[in-house]
Image (cartoon, rainbow, N blue to C red; front, side, top):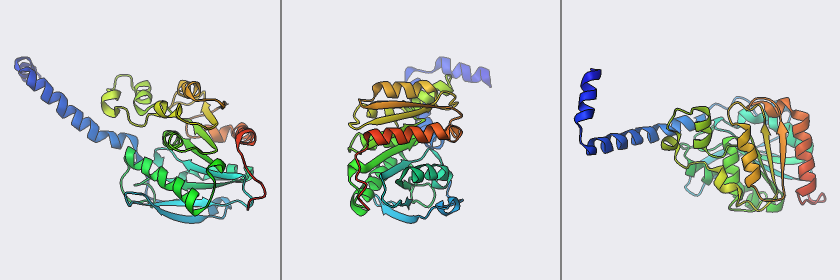
Length: 283
């Protein structure tokens, strides 16, 4: 069988190779979504499980996809964090971040991308950007929060989505945690033998977006991150405009912030105290 295949390839004209490569690219691109997104439709816990009051929120994107989210209020909040999660699970996987923001005096709004949790649809790059726009508009128009008091924050894949949103609007601050330069570059680092560029092209390119952000940027990354190399965080920091800061934490990709909780919380507190414009007389 192997001999027969080799004979076919050797005798095939150039159009055969072009057709074969095109077919492979179609197959690879069709598989790329399943390599990026790992949604879970099951909401396992809610903010009530960490003793926080919350409001279940449903918003609609401009292409009429209904998204599910949580609004966690704080009395006399310093501002609001618009949080975009990573590529796995859903918002119920990220409850451990809520007490941090709550103690620092920030309200928090989390959404599930389309196809995640109770949100409708199926995830795509363009779709997640539309989801981010809808969440931003909800805070601006429904919660009446000024852009200068919104912290746009993303973890891992959410960092790219946060950077994309902040490159088109001007929030008070941007925080990118454990984020990558691009999907293709992190895939190449993890699997040097894989055709990362063919698989992913230029999708989720944080590198292209970060230089367009016109507000203070905090980059958070662990030197022990086993999924997104530390160098990605350093390069993003290099590309960001001033004012900017880098917060180094310790531990694995998915739990480094928790293992470095004191450094993590105090770093965010310090950064926001220096750079976020807020009015503590506002309810």
